Length: 263
Length: 251
Image (cartoon, rainbow over all chains, first blue to last red; front, side, top):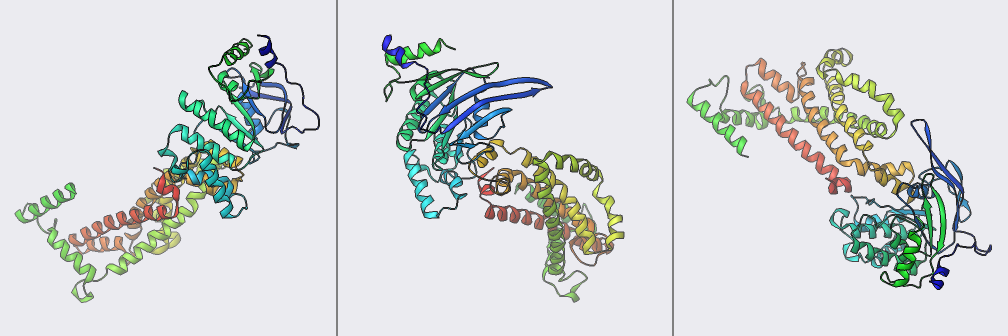
């Protein structure tokens, strides 16, 4: 028990020399429901450092998706500030890309065209972006399906395309909103493995929202735990299990139980 | 193919047996003859002989102009009203009020404003075709999955380019529905516009034939409108498919 407790400790702020990739300060969100204010998020502050994989976990309705939407720039916070590499966030942009839970691919574009969509918006030369698309198609294992339409591929493959179309833009923060939540158990584990593999290769900073604790333990460097009414971060846990993590190991189960007790 | 063949069969039998006299229901053979004369005859072979190309050309021009105007106004206004609540509030009341007026009641007014001929017909066609185009564009734009627009925004697409790269392709199935309905109505209102004493056009042929008691030519006119209407619909869809990936790929 003792060595494991070490793996669950509050995260101390890192050395000041490193600028956080993402920082939130005193964020709050108040929505009005038929005139009555509903405090969805209260006083949320955290820093995420470059290359970290953070999982945000909490009960449904605690405001996880609201928080992610604010970081993405889809929603304006009622109070507080969000900075990405020192720049304040005011609207959506390719520096913070989202992989949604639902299928968000453009059904009139092929797999390859979906992935190339964001690149085309930049003034890059065609050959270069072609190569970037081919490389990412290869990384997510979809080269043979490049000319398929989204309707013709499985849910797991669609999420791989969704991941590829944002990774190809090299975002500073990759935001993932329960991206594997709608997949069957097998595909979900495959996608988790794929995400870890891509994270190892490309080292993006990842902010991953989930309600699945084992998913969080498999993936995260650090788990932020939320509670609801109002939504707030109640613990910030470093996960120091060695990688690759075995979902069946005793350490895994112990950590699972220990965190489970907190919410 | 079964229904047209049956109709043709019954029609021939009725004609030959003599249930209906030829001046009320000419036989298919007589109609084919009249159609041939209309298509390829010389003017000295009868009042309608050889008019085909001129009539069809004139009618196509009227329908084309009217439909073009209706699309030019209906598509952008519809898309804006589907996306921008203020524009919707501004437009929907007046447009629904005007829509409730039967198209035919505009005819006297159009005749006074524009006189007999091209302008009146184009006005009627444009007015009638506008509503299905506008309404379908509005509902198509309104129902676009917001997650596609969010996806576009996060990938660096501003709202103007997003309109062309995401909104229009996403709404394409309904835009097509509106355009096809609009084109169909255009043909109906073309005949209305041409029934008012213009010298040429397919509607004028039908009207002249009625005055002259030429049932065969009325039927030639009706069949011609059915055929050209169907052909123009096919061409419209094929054209849209040629220019839009989403028209090709989305159902």
